[in-house]
Length: 386
Image (cartoon, rainbow, N blue to C red; front, side):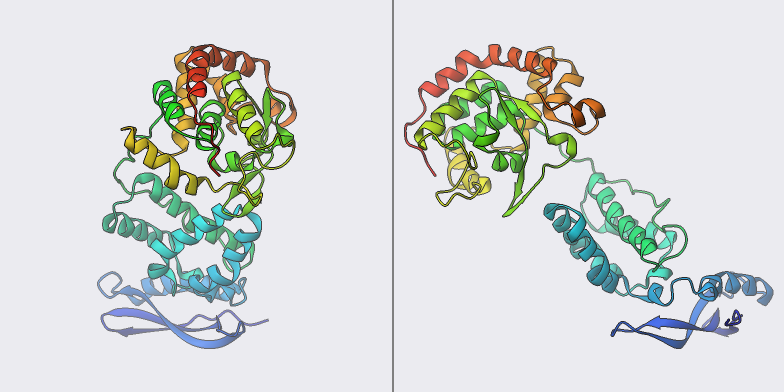
């Protein structure tokens, strides 16, 4: 067993330094025993050698324990590329993987790629977050996402033996930053106007989004074989060309379909030749429809010409919650309709039919919008745009 090293203290450049040996990670994946030196404190901070000696032994404690077997000396950039991101790619959704990678590339790589894992301290995390906040115009929400990604990196470093001890991002504060802009919720009037001016499939996609609360990826992932005429079972979510499951387990649930939406869907189905299986919104080649292309080519130009501002697909989901609340539907029931993860674990994970309260709530919305939505349907263009 190797004897614990005490290191050699010396003065240089107005500070105390300790010289020691450590197994250092090499680019070929091996480790090499090397002599290193690290600054302990300035002479002004610790004029007495005895005080510095205590600090030096604290610094060498992890080196002497040798619990990380050299992997703790791996630069964060290498650890992320060779260990962490491959792990995320296999365990998380493709969109989540891209989000983590983008945060690293945009905000962390230039600052941390050469920092060794075990040398990063909570103080370094605090200074890092302050630096990012002071040099960018990010919101507090974005800063929290950055901290979460970095915390996840160090958590995985602990799992893989590259780090021993507390996650250094634990206790790091989020700097004060600007508040995010107010999110938007489409009103029923705005939705009705859209339905009167848009051709298919845009009108049917928007009717489905506005009155079911499906997320954009879920809209792309709904299938005719999961549609009963009164409900849609959400079994898939599509991001780019990746077909996966919905965002959470609680998202994988049936959604009530009110009559105006059913009329739009049945009209659209009839124009396609009454398919019974396959993606509801599909390209001519049978792939899930690229809704961003539909938005750019059809929806936004039409809405701009009518003086209607486009606020994105999630505004329909917020709009459904807002409109249900305006009709007196309890928030808890609205959460069931929107399939939020925090609503009723038992009901969301084990009940496979549409909740009776959800059906009653959507019936209120159906009564509210039925006549006007039918008028929009009546004026819809006959041609189906693929």
